[in-house]
Length: 235
Image: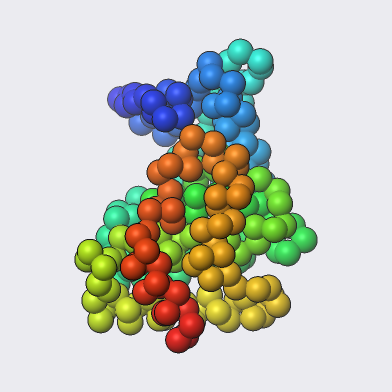
């Protein structure tokens, strides 16, 4: 069985072949071809950091790219998708799993920025998760740790009921943020405020191209930004 969809935003055809358990992404658009190349390179880097992955599975990652056409073949990784739109109190355990996976592969001197590190861009099994959708990935040390903040703040975005965070969401947010604080302290890296993070995204918009318009991190209203900034100051 096959599933086919077309992303108008990215001008990319996405085809899933369930018989072979493979994804195929292709495009004739110049910018989209560049994104496909980034995704291939991102997966290559990620697979090199996961030696426990089945070698036959890894060997199925392939690309065909020239000036006018790009196509990549991506093996489906073992696990299930989780709803990224659920609030943080539901997704807390998945976010912590994701952060642990990210830290296990990301060293300060050997690092690839994912660019859209989200619950929706991972697959989970009982004790492990795998990162997918590397089309925005770049090698740039200024972004170290930004992915961790992205998955956290994106989950906060989907936790707001208008401009209110429930007690259980605040409790889960505090648990996750404590883990993030510990990581940044151990790595001796400055932890950005929500305002600084938003500015970093806007000033580096070329990393995302047209896709920047869909990022939840840039969709907070002013009151929500104030609430998050206050949360950071008090933790």
